Image (cartoon, rainbow, N blue to C red; front, side, top):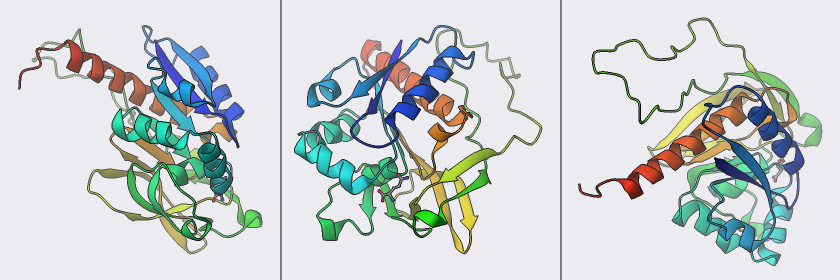
Amino acid sequence: AVTIGVLGLQGGHAEHAHSLLNVARSHALPPDVQLSVRDVRKPEHIADPSLDALIIPGGESTSMAIIAESMGLMQPLRDFVNLHKKPAWGTCAGLIMLANHATHTKQHGQSTIGGLSVTVDRNAFGSQRDSFVCDLAPPPFSAPSSSASSASPSATVPASAPPTTTPTPFPGIFIRAPLVSSIDAPSVLTLCTVSHKGHQGPVAVRQDHILGTAFHPELTQDTRWHEYFVNMVVEAKRAAAAGQGGSGSG
Ligand code: GLN
């Protein structure tokens, strides 16, 4: 079983929980994976060892940071992401929270969780009325690694082959969204970019266990980004279990 928490301080947390439950109900997950979803609002929720991963929703990152700070959540959040290195996904304001650097934050004394080696430009596309929807590349094909029953070395055909047809675009909803203005480490992968009215750059990035999207997959009926994240969590949990249970040598 994997347990994913959604930070419920402010913004679109209910929508993320809804999307995760849709993934749990679909047949998108490996049959041995059971997904449970939790609301995370208190330091003890974050420190609970049974929490495997966290989604930080969109909303307003200054408000979110102020609430997190006042509730004593900032350090537990930093420990969760950067010390225990559990998977985290930030959407929009959540991406700003996870970025190591963000524009227009310092003057408010806004603190972030950090961990993602990128700089984000807040409100890069303009004001609320400049919000838009556009087609994006879908998340990369990702099948959870079949650890135990690995095929014989002679098998060359993958269990599930990547799609050969052009994938259906993902509906990207941008609401006063940030844009990644610089990638600050080679380990940051750009998963998707946008070009809109003269503004262009990465809008989905991943660095190891951290995923950030500038848009709002939780506001669509398309659960592919949620599936992608759940698979990240499943893989991270398997890798952690293998690390603990393994020989430990080397
Ligand atoms: N503009 C918001 C911020 O800077 C983010 C908007 C969103 O999450 N939809 O925090």
